[in-house]
Image (cartoon, rainbow, N blue to C red):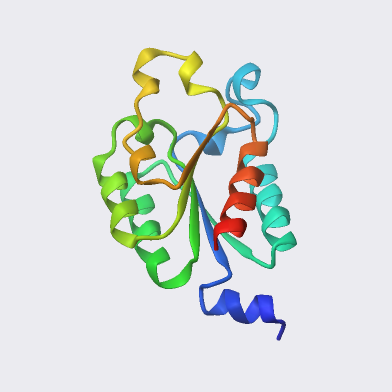
Amino acid sequence: MTEASSAAEAGRGTILVINGPNLNMLGTREPEKYGTSTLADVEQLAASAAEKHGFVVECVQSNHEGVLLDAIHAARENAAGIVINAGAFTHTSVALRDALAAVQLPAVEVHITNVHQREEFRHHSYLSPVCAAVIVGAGVTGYRLAIDYLADVL
């Protein structure tokens, strides 16, 4: 067993990548805004980025807030950090904010588009204040940047 896989088993080498509502539609949903990469492409990009740093990723996507909450809670025991694109829940979910604060893991909030160039309601994030970093508008490359950041701070 390699050192990276041993660390991953202990949770120290795992990064949880969370994608919220509608991100399962990547590749077909408004490609002019979100591009043509699919969720599978994003997950592969994240896995490749993590592997370069000796980490593995666990990817969770759900359109249901409770599933995302459960994944964050479980991360306390089995992950070293979190990358989260909560989609629309970013702007509405105090519950996700509280879960991220409770697990006390470094988290990076990611948005494929620049939310500050979009509708006013997208300018506010409940998650940003409890995240170590926020990456917006870098397309799916933002996931790689988030993992690079976490690798640097972990």
